[in-house]
Length: 287
Ligand SMILES: [Zn+2]
Ligand SMILES: [Zn+2]
Ligand SMILES: [Zn+2]
Image 1: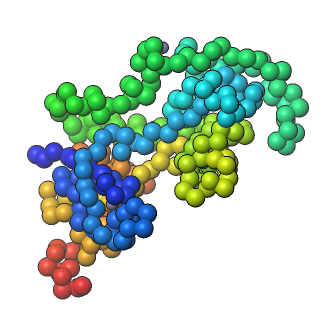
Image 2 (image 1 turned 90 degrees about the horizontal axis):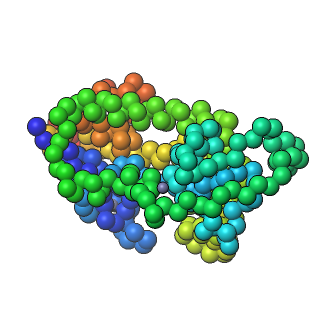
Image 3 (image 1 turned 180 degrees about the vertical axis):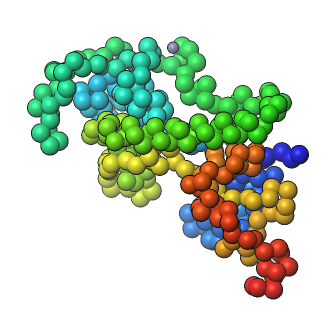
């Protein structure tokens, strides 16, 4: 038995799942730093596996547009939750306008939205535990280091849930528009994006902080966060000379597989599950 570590690089966004960091020299560093060097691994948390993507909660996504000046009138909640609310999930703390008549549009122009209706004041999560606080398992994990009794079963369940959420989000996105910024990772659930000028993209000051909205794909809402696949977590660390034999997987998938879940059929090619990895001696001769 071994402990599955999750490590993140201090110099670049890479994440690695495994008992030790890998030795593949694919660190891009920060800014002008030299490329293709070793990573500097430190311990990561659950937010490095599932990258949290938040968006504004709107009482009516077809109503008032979120402006820079009015941004504090809206709660920031996980984009997936906002998508589910718009699709009909009732969460008392995040009310949503339910229409009896559909919004009539011609192209992108709204002909009839049934008038503007002000929603109740935003919930403001300070007074109780917010959804995000519940998801912040980094602080949770500090205290409880006990491992669940059946890790393999938990891994299977987690992986199944992840694939399920991914499929569900894909289906919902066919009906409900989700926008993403072409310059940063901001996501907006609704037909037009918002006007908050907080685009954090590098060298985009000339855009006055305005986001550049385009249609989002599932990966924008649930970033896959690819990591190298470690076939044998008890073996030697992954190395540069063998990188052409290694596959990749979303961090969650890799975590579950290392914990004993079976590789899902659709990830086998990407994870290069059927490629024979030569032992280091053969690799040395081949290099
Ligand atoms: Zn790095
Ligand atoms: Zn509350
Ligand atoms: Zn942006």
